[in-house]
Length: 99
Image 1 (tube, helix red, strand yellow):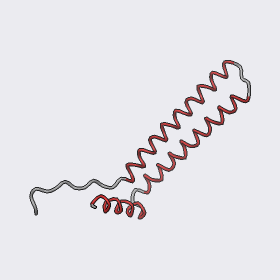
Image 2: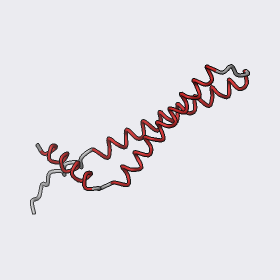
Image 3: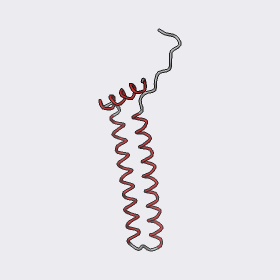
Image 4: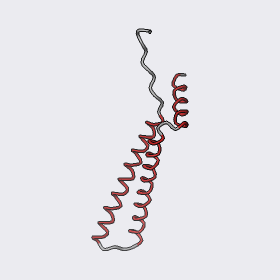
């Protein structure tokens, strides 16, 4: 039950505002990733609907791929950081010598 106590303590700390700046930065990262993903999907939809010359079609495809890759990288980064920030502190190692 030690892990449950540590988990509840971490949630209590987060509710009090510990690491608030890191959580805020991570939320901004999620929003930026979502914006890049939406922009990439919008450009892809526009590229399908409007016939472009071949050179512009290649440029649009490269731009769309870069936006999608950047958004997925940011989503993965934000997700990993969120897991790290919500994880409770590790249990201290057992002490051989008692004080």
